[in-house]
Image 1 (tube, rainbow, N blue to C red):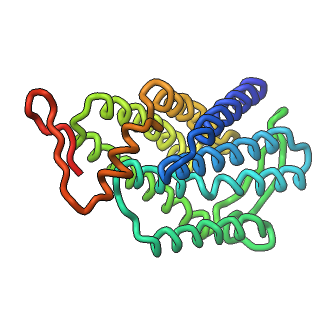
Image 2: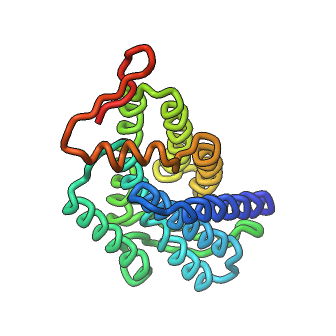
Length: 259
């Protein structure tokens, strides 16, 4: 079982590295920047968890945990920014700044564990066979952070489904459907890890296979359905920014696009 978990982790990291590299090579707008931010946050999170799996002492485990959280505290926030941009939702700068400060503060809280009991308490390091485990109870800040992640997920899925319903272009709908599958998959695994207290979630972080599956679908959206394509950029970053109204019709006279 331990070997399978390690294989999943290595596959996830390789997939995220490939996705990050593809996005980085085409980095030229806010949408790309937010997706790249999401890729890097997930990559750091998964690499930190890999080090957790190899930890043999409590000190090594805590160091790996802090590395993992250097990415983990930003994954949901990056998702929020990416989905907002993809769906054309303009988020005020003050809200972005406030949320960014909250996540930065969350990392400070995690980094200073176990000097306090705000995030984790009753910490105990042990091994389950070859698997290192940190038993703990959740502190108040952890509870708040979990609720925030839940709100991000609800927002992202609601925005994506509404945008999918309004979209008329068949290719764009297929692209959105793949993105929705990716985020739904990651959300299910994340919510299970946060809110289902089972023997499995106490031993293994279920968000990791969720990230692996979600990364696969995001790669499909990027490679097969041109998520980073220039046609969509022309619509979202040129026409949508004009103060004048633009309506485009297809060959049958139906509305194909409007800003």
